[in-house]
Length: 432
Ligand code: ZN
Image (cartoon, rainbow, N blue to C red; front, side, top):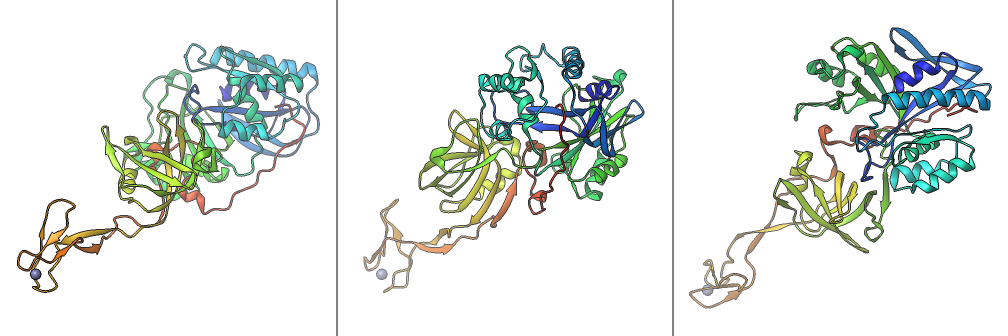
């Protein structure tokens, strides 16, 4: 859809800055997969530096860094016709979970709406009245929830940002099995360190290739547009007929909020510091659960089966360990679905090595039964404690994340967590 809209827009207008792919609250229960929205800034008379942002059907596409003039009302209406036509012909409106919407705004509303839409649940009527107040052109389909994402995407001001280079298949190949060589993707992963979430070697998951029957062949994510172009040249695949570079909030952890346990609400995503209450346990299906507590309460945390080898880290936790957990909040039962964990301090765990030795006789005592202590059968001396030793822990303090195959679009990979965030240069006076 992005490609088609851009292709039509550039016939009459200028694209200002990179098109934006904005992910919103990943825990909204009625979302489509990925909960994403697209924002394109459009102007008429362009200025500043031209930058190549893609190729559509063999033709280079550029964006301008600034716009000298916004669009007048009739140009806005014309633009709306283009968007409407594309949404109505290309969105999968018949899909039960798809509720598209489009919004055109001459001025960006406050960024605060973006932050609420990426972290919480924003009511639709609030967005509709904001759009009316800003004299927006907009249309929602079906339950109209697409308006929330579209408006929030416009409100995003890229502070920390990443990029995704998306390639498209020629129409005759839509729906066919995708041909993308896995080995070449592993090579690009090794050779382009500023890219992320490309390939999960352990779980044989080629993450750059989508599962859905959409026209996208693959998308490579990374910190730097130049490196992404290099990376895409390393991918051996079936022919592509277009590609486009997007500025995104993927891999930024924008969805997470520091919180205390009693403030946790379902459908949000949180970072909670707490102490592990008891040793983790595995339930049917291979899901691993444990509880943490802080001075406001207790909550369950879960590493579900799809998080694969991450579960062995979680199983290594013990009561008393100090951790920061990162994850989305499930409603019933209220549980943090782990995306990452920082193990800050391991508790000292002791284990029984043998029955106590009688101090008088030097012989091992006998157990009197479970939890009833020990007794020397020769002289009758008793003891309540066996001989203990400090248990060697299977895990070390540090950050651990779910594997690439289980990662959310918004989750910041650990390899990005030590890097400095980049600041975006944004265009001005654009119709969005
Ligand atoms: Zn004795």
